[in-house]
Image 1 (spheres, helix red, strand yellow):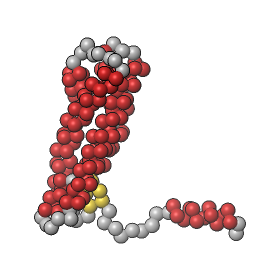
Image 2 (cartoon, rainbow, N blue to C red):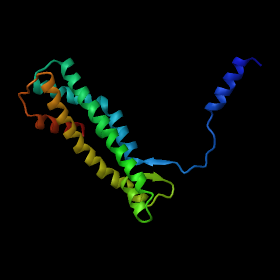
Image 3 (tube, rainbow, N blue to C red):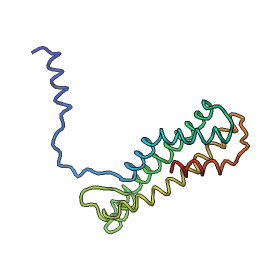
Image 4 (cartoon, one colour):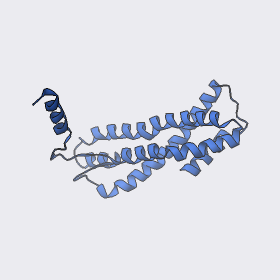
Length: 171
């Protein structure tokens, strides 16, 4: 058999799934929040661009650029960064003796086989999603204030009103 064919066969075999007996899992909030922020971006960018264009009178290309950067920053910091930080902190807390390790597991929304308080993880995730929603509002507001000073844009509208309206629609 040629070395080229051997390499191809080895590569194909390496890609085949294997049976694992691991107790895999992860933080439910990170899965939910990451999915919501990443897959919802088209809708969010569309609505926020329309609202900013209407409020500011800027052209569509400029408003899209402003909205895109604000959402990129808030997605990295709040949508993915906050749940990852929470998961990392509570992962260490899970090493505490029971019941405290179980509490840390639940607060970090860690979902895995035999996770304590697993029936409450959906509710805890919803509470954390509310926190991420509020943090997103404040993160984007801070970004807009900084970015608009940088590009020398002075809004003739309330930033608070714009941010809360945009997030109420996209929510």
